[in-house]
Image (cartoon, one colour):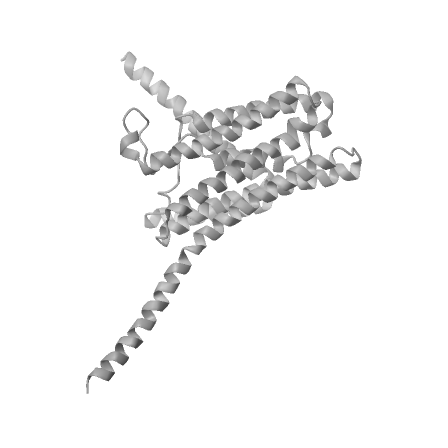
Amino acid sequence: MNTEPEEMGDAHATEPQKERRGIRKGLYLIPSAFTAANIGMGYFAVMGALRGFQLLEGGTEAELIQATSHFDNASRAIGWAVVFDALDGRIARLTKTTTEIGVQLDSIADVVTFGIAPAVLAYAWGYGSAFAEGSSAHKLGWFISFMFLICGAFRLARFNVQASRPRVLAEGLVKVDKKNFVGLPIPMAGGFIAALVHFSPAPLSFHGVERGAIYSGLLMGAIALLSVLMVSTVRYTSFKTVGIGRRSTRLAVLAIAASGMLVWLYSRYVLVSIVGAYILYGLLGRLAGLFRHRGASQN
């Protein structure tokens, strides 16, 4: 007599379990969706940069205005990709849905969005339009954009290896911790190029031959510095410990709200200032460490 109710009870008990399993599987799609959005923004940025470069061949004022709009939209896409890249990892950790394929997909997305897209954008907006094709400066611009891409890919590969085998790499290499990155993160390197374009979206050729050449030279120097910083051992904070304590959580929420409003109102100035300050933070920290080490050795 008790057999039928028990079987019915077991059948009803499995339904909530199946629902929970379905919800659990659905959570794995959320970080991947942000990663896919990251790749989409990178693709949009590449196409926008190419379209803007194509319009510069006409030379009319209307085409110049359209090219400027394309360059600005491409830089904005890279900026949104930085947000998506920051969210996909945090969401995966919060929901405990981190997977190996998700880690690899995120790295591939970063190569596209923060490697290829900024390199193409810098060429199309900057020295590709300012220097005559086939000239030495033009060829140097090709080389620097290529090296930016290669250094960014190497930066991601080193990060993945260090994250998967930290104990093995600890011998003879810089110790890896969760609070710091070793080398400038590629989203910040690509984000700085995007912030520069967003600050002044008109192509450098718009400023004339002489000034365009000067600005292009400075741009190539900045990209070369970014490339070196990505493969360097300079430490940069990861912000992964921000908001852990109650007090720090309140401060983090206030800082994010204030930064968001400032970006909304003064994006041209705030974005380039924030990314530039982050890059200088690592450089100044390394210089301060060298001076402290030298002073300690002399004493």
